[in-house]
Each structure stands twice: as structure tokens, then as C-alpha cells.
Length: 158
Image 1: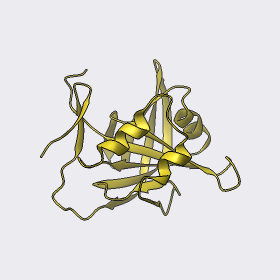
Image 2: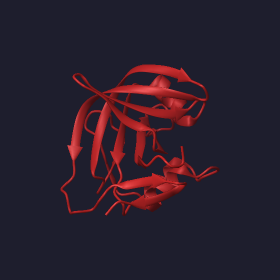
Image 3: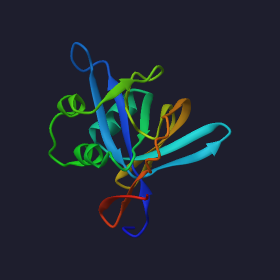
Image 4: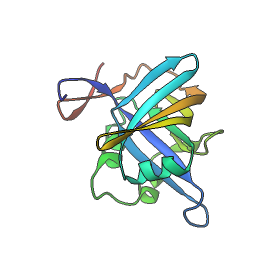
């Protein structure tokens, strides 16, 4: 699978039950795709038992920001094993709150979608989360290309 090029997104959600102001949670994903145009559905694969899997099982609203080639550091930070807390990671990532999901949307991303979970499918050691797109927000294009993942490395396409 290392020879399959994939786009890179930051999947985010807000957990209002964690602490007095809630907690933002994020994870880098390369298994993210469009499932249907009518209705608009997307799919993301999350590791079973992960913090994101546990949160998306309880909370139906989440978001995905399509990262640009200049956002490699953001992708790497949210993909690290044994990483800092999400709260600390988000402090250094410019973002705004999604109007529908309340999840962080990465500033400068190529696009962002907010979703409501429609279905969860257990698949080996991952959970496939199918979400209905409830809001989209493309960014102003500055000619920056997408961030891709190929042969274990982040790469730009432009």
C-alpha cells in the first residue's frame, strides 16, 4: 500500500464533556474519501480504540481539513505516536471553529468539510466512519497544491 498516493487530512472533533471548556481532538488521516454525491457522504478510517474512535462513537459531529503541501508539520504533529496532548498541539495550529460541528478547521487548508456520522463499520483493527457532509468551506486558492503521502513520506504535488 506504500505505493498508493493518498491525500492528507486533519480529522477533528470537539469533546464538550472533557474539562470545563471541552477538548479538541485531532488525527492525521490518509484514508479519507468521497463515498457519494447524493447524499454527500465521505468516509474516514480510524484506528479502533483510539481517542478519535472513542470520541466519534459518542459524538456524531466532526470535521476534516484537506491539508496543503505547506502543512507537513501539522500533519506530522497529529500523526506522532506518544505525542503531546491535543490541547497543546492545537495551540500552534491556526484554526477556527466549524459553525455546525464546533470542531477546529485548519486555516489555510485547501478545503474543510463538517460531517455528521451516518454509519460506523468495524473493519479489522480500524473503524470506517461514514459521515454526511453538512457544511463545506473551500479556502481561497493561492496556487498551493495538496499534501500527499507516498512511500511513507509527505510530499507536495506541485
